[in-house]
Image (tube, rainbow, N blue to C red; front, side, top):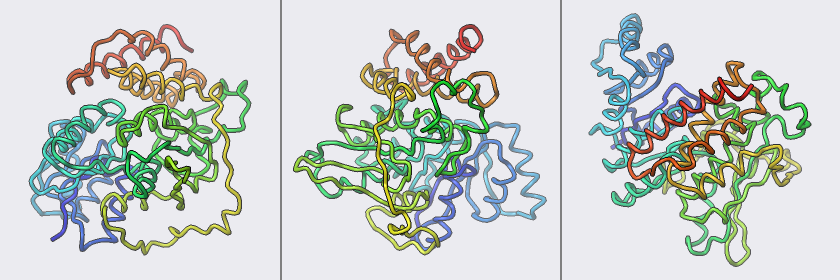
Length: 394
């Protein structure tokens, strides 16, 4: 019997790669639910191909356009079309769903992801923001239900694999690798002039807009430090970051006896997606181009990140140290900053300055004892970030 999948963020890069993995494993999975935002054309083609029971769009206004596209495609199967957060929750907790892939942009799928865990669904986590904003709540719910949160993010998937070499108490240190993005060698004095077009040209990965910019600022690695803390139960001081431009080693785990386990692979998201979906099994991958050629790779390089160039790493550590709502504030301010940069309302160099300003304003904000607290803090951080853009930063 095949497992029913719900994919939150099915039209994004992770969602589409997840469906490619499903195509390669038809005896193990079927698509029970799809959720997307505004990309109705791609979503309609996915519905026609995979026949989900329920499909979710971001807002009510997109339901009729989706129905019209399905009608034009000659699709006459019954499918429930829902929308918004309530629709996402309905999809993620549907009785036909066994496994939820959380790949929605930012905190868009946070509520649905949390509810999926509370309903005992297996979870493949492909976005960092869920655990950054609400890590304590999500992991506590997973512990109550006795389910494991399986990371799809390549770095944390690598850590998950390396940790299988020993027990949790034997882990001395986690080392997250970072490509360094497109501006690893760019003089700091030139950061003010960096354009969105330049920042979106990642040297290794092909990803969505926000994560590509986050890779350029190394905010993504700061978020990954916070995520690793919650996923693997290690202290923040046990999590390091190293720049590895080739992106062949995806992360490493150092054990107390000095042994270091590293997970190597070509930089392709189908590998960590399949690992999470089929865990604890390992299945062969038949897709071309997914076999690592170490001879072709030749040399691997490692350098420490320059926190003057990438101050967001220290901001993330500060947010994790403060705890409470602060990691959520960090994430929300960054999301607003990235959107403003892409829309030419904010300089590239001002992204970490905006995050730092909003964190400073909200250092005494309330706790994060519930999902409602997290969502309220998220909205307040976004409001303040917009205010900072208008009144303080260029």
